[in-house]
Length: 259
Image (cartoon, rainbow, N blue to C red; front, side, top):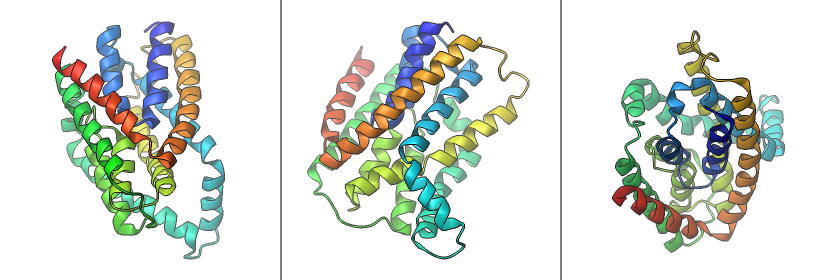
């Protein structure tokens, strides 16, 4: 992987991790277009995912600080309840990740037609939110679990994680701003855990297949792009602008599926 490929793939990861267009689907398409096999470069994958997690921590630093402060009071307060809901939402993806990890990884095979079809499904999911009026419900434990199931579906390349989880929250009547915040906070621990597992499972090869320069470029690009995309996504959800991403996914999905 050269520096230009790292720049493009880092940009793709940073933008599409938060924008509802499927980062996994775009990275698969990017691999096909650029002729690079990111799956072999585990170090690069871990680094760019770490960069997007860091951008999430920066954007939500006040919320995370407040949650941690409430947790260490060791009381059943609002912060403890919210953190418990995040953990509760992780149960489906943890179970599926442990049981079906190999089956999920088998889907990341560069099948452009399959990714195109999944992007069309993402477009439909986002379109449904345009027809749904804004709700006023706070996210409860059952809501968190349902959103967690949506996150499992989004492990398929081409199905947007942020788009599916936010859309699910909106469709069951949750507040727009809360839907976006919960969607971004709930993914931090699963990404860190998945990265840690990948490193432990591939200790011998980690860091041996890529130069330092592409790693640095990929990290910086993914972090900056993720920072901008995360802030933009919160504003877009508040305004109910997901329909534009539905149109985008429809266009890219059709091109990938038929061309």
